[in-house]
Length: 226
Ligand SMILES: Nc1ncnc2c1ncn2[C@@H]1O[C@H](COP(=O)(O)OP(=O)(O)OP(=O)(O)O)[C@@H](O)[C@H]1O
Ligand SMILES: [Mg+2]
Image (tube, rainbow, N blue to C red; front, side, top):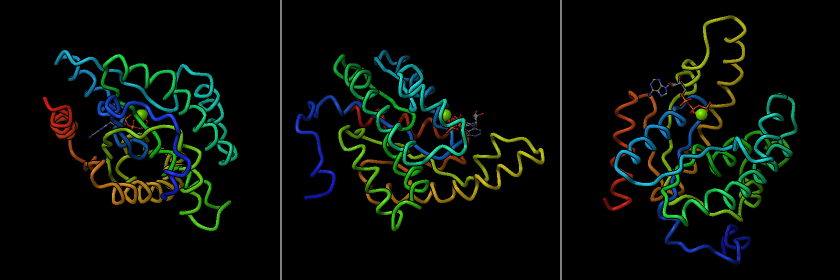
């Protein structure tokens, strides 16, 4: 029995509705929010009902707490990871599932993979290695179902951060610190993609916006059998 199965929810939801659940993942600045928005607009234009959502959530209590908490650079990573999981369970139960049940496609901008990738790196000092750390994060998240398919927007952190920072000295310092961290996070994402080749597509996030959007669009239409 795999570790996930051991802790899996005993009241699984109808697997059929999960076929319309999609995730967009990747490091900071990879283009997740932009691509989630473009995908939502595209599906709406096709008259396909859709809910585009994100994590941390913006309107649920744990998501609000988390966004506040993350402004403090020294917040404890174990607490962060736990709060991410609480927010996710609320998000899944009160927003994702109802939307799927009403027949909508759900596109989430970040989900479980972001927790595994970011918090596994952040929490690894508390565990013997990043595998044990990732395993604890998976346990915390074992009561939500994963999306049917995940688009991993992958690019070098130097490139994604350059989209977000200007060339000031202080920004350069922050960029340097973050580049090192995000390089490890990127590796964790790619590890997840290697382990789950059928559930995800790795997309080169260094390509232009329209090219990425067409790749996602094409795959979604085939997954929805349209
Ligand atoms: N393929 C691309 N080429 C050039 N610029 C892009 C591309 N994708 C996104 N951008 C720009 O990069 C910036 C970051 O994009 P976006 O906010 O979608 O990233 P994100 O992955 O959601 O980041 P975060 O994880 O920090 O929320 C935005 O200004 C966006 O317009
Ligand atoms: Mg974003």
